Image (cartoon, rainbow, N blue to C red; front, side):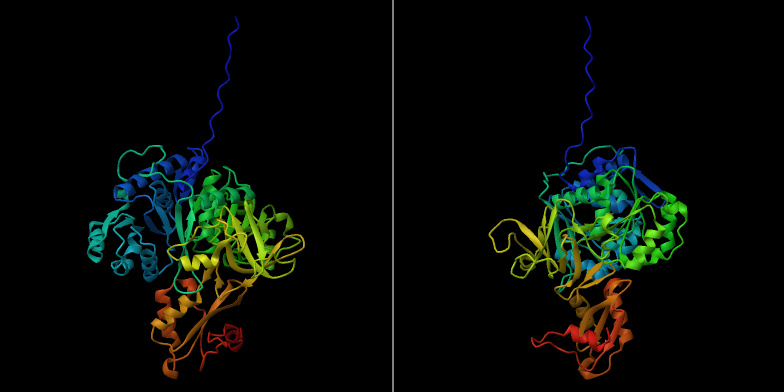
Amino acid sequence: MTALIRPEPAPLAPPAPTRLDDLIRYGDPDSPALTYQDATLSYRDLTALVSAAAAGLRRIGVRRGDRVLVCLEKRLETVVAMLAVSAAGGVLVPVNPAFKPGQVAYVAADCAGLVLITSVERSRPLLDELAGTRSLRQLVLVGDPTAGDLAAAQQAAPAMQAIGWRQLVGTAPLRWQRAAPSEPVIDVDIAAIFYTSGSTGGPKGVVLSHRNLLAGAQSVSGYLGQTSSDVLLGVLPLSFDAGFSQLTTALYSGAHLVLVNYLLPREIVRLCARYRITGLTCVPPLWLQLAGQNWPAEATRRLRYFANTGGRMPRSTLDTLRTIFPDARPFLMYGLTEAFRSTYLDPAEVDRRPDSIGKAIPNAEVLVLRPDGTECDPGEHGELVHRGALVALGYWNDPERSQLRFRAYPPGSDSAERAVWSGDLVYRDEEGFLYFVGRTDDMIKTSGYRVSPTEIEEVAYASGLVGEAAAFGVPDEQLGQHIVLAVTGVAGGECDTGALARSIGEELAKYMVPRRIVVLPELPRSPNGKFDRVELRRLVGA
């Protein structure tokens, strides 16, 4: 009798992800996941550390829906902390490490954050500002804090308990396992709140679900063709939606992400050579610097794509980069935090339409609509409206602004579906390709960031050095726009622009500081009494 030979069962594919931290299951356990400086974590190491940190967060009281702020430069602990918040059932609030103490305190108070994870060095100037934030209960310090550091933190902010990162993670042997949150978390739950400038007032928190982030990772990694053999260089901030997207797409494809805190353009070239980078995403100001570098063959040989986001790349820069990277495919991308990613231009179309922002990414629909909600004809300017799985849940604790930006689709219906009205003016050509025109509001687009003129103006007023103030953006080949601040002196007197610039620099991140401050006898106003920024541009020769 012939024995039956049963075939070995095929290995089971990992189940579809439902939480942000599920993405770490897609990499081979023994393959490199993250590198920072001379340290590398495999996917096995990363999963174990995330599990340990998540257990630590639950131990200090983090429960489903609690907001946890992570204010760190790029390093291994930053990624572990971000994923651990998800694994513990909490809500991640990435904070731009370039933010000044007052801005960090604003975010912490606005989202009612429970825990702040930051470095010893960054905590020192923060403590006085954070002492008045009632919701914060725990401070976790990364970077080997001394007993003196912990005591100083405790003294400055008595309501917060201060512990070190190692104390949070613990010393028990690390195991390869999936962390289980204290309460069940599903894909429609809030995963993260990204703070971005609003057209009025302080930063607004864009609320993203696990589904938003996972759909974005799947879509972007798909059209970029990323695989587990890719090695990506993470240059953009993880608090920036495009930088965070680079992390999620790397994990989704099981790729290797090399983290770098950008210092000098030649360092980017060196790292591309050292790690044989295959994918590089930057914003236009950085691409302009990189285009002027000397790129040896070992730095470009393996690069299979380069991508631009955060503004239009000048045609001359694109041409130079295509010469430097002759075998790499250029991806020109457009996104907004409220929908994470929106469009990209197929590399095959770059020669024919290099000024286009392309078409909708997979699993999204992008429309060009008139103010009445009807669709624009080809060539007609209208507002870019994004619908689909990537549309955010709204703005944190701000129903009024949420209703303005996130509206029922189809327009005017009582549908439960919400699309996001971007505030960006675009048009579509006869073949369906989109082109960026400008903004429908006064937002300034600089260095890949959207900056609120009101936020700059409020800091100027708080200095006591100005009578009136109006900020606006003017075209800039490198930055997209640079910021100009027009002011009058107090009671018609003089204005010390040097002191004003220093005061603004102490309160706002560097990219928000005006390049020029112009003193005028009076600021022009429109018939409705608002500052006339068009006339201001004319007056200052912009």
